[in-house]
Structure formats: structure tokens, C-alpha cells
Amino acid sequence: QVQLVGSGGGLVQPGGSLRLSCVASGRTFSSYSMAWFRQAPGKEREFVAAFRWSGGTPLYADSVKGRFTISRDNAKMAVYLQMNSLKSEDTAVYYCAASYLTYSGPLYVDSSYAFWGQGTQVTVSS
Image 1 (cartoon, rainbow, N blue to C red):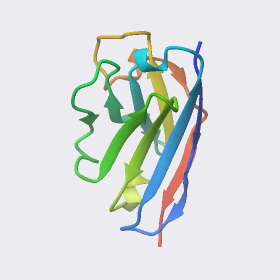
Image 2: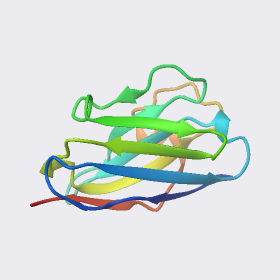
Image 3: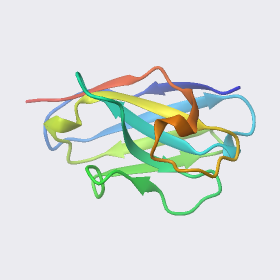
């Protein structure tokens, strides 16, 4: 079992930056692929970024590519999302997620993830 606690959201002006954090509890954190999803009001939850447990190049949604960076620290059992050049359309509740153990399927669908954090609100507004 994995428990996830996300933090770091807040209010930021367009063009600004925020760094989200997600800390996990449990064992074998390094064997879980980790991801960030977001859900804006009135919209479905959508994929933002992911890092496969076995390594490799992180995966990003086209809408955030070049602006957001996902990273993980297995020693701290944490995953981060650095968000730069924020836009109003980035406003949403952001969720971190952990996949099934050593999962090898697609990372961009929410059905690939067994554990979810509680969500942290990001509001981009002047």
C-alpha cells in the first residue's frame, strides 16, 4: 500500500512558477511509476507528466511540454513537478499518483494508477 501527500499549490500570476511536491509512504517506492494529473473545474482529469519506475525519459502532455519538469527522489520517496511560465489554463487541482507495482503499461491514462494523493489547488490569475 502506498499513501501519497501532495503539497505546494497556491495562487500565482501568469508567467510565474510553482513547485509541487508529493511524498509517499510505504515500501519499494522506486518500483512505482509516478505521475501528475490535473482536473480543472467542469473538466475531466487529464494527464500532465509521468516518470516510469524503470527510468528513461519522462513523459509530458503536449500542453505542458517545455514548461513543466517532473522529477523524483527515491531516497526521499518523493516526486516533484516544477511548473514554469504558468498560464491561466493551468489552473486546476493537481494530483500525484503511483502506478501498480513495476507497471509496464501506458503512463498517460489514469487507470494505470492504483494510488492517488489528495490533490493540491493551483490557481493562475492576475
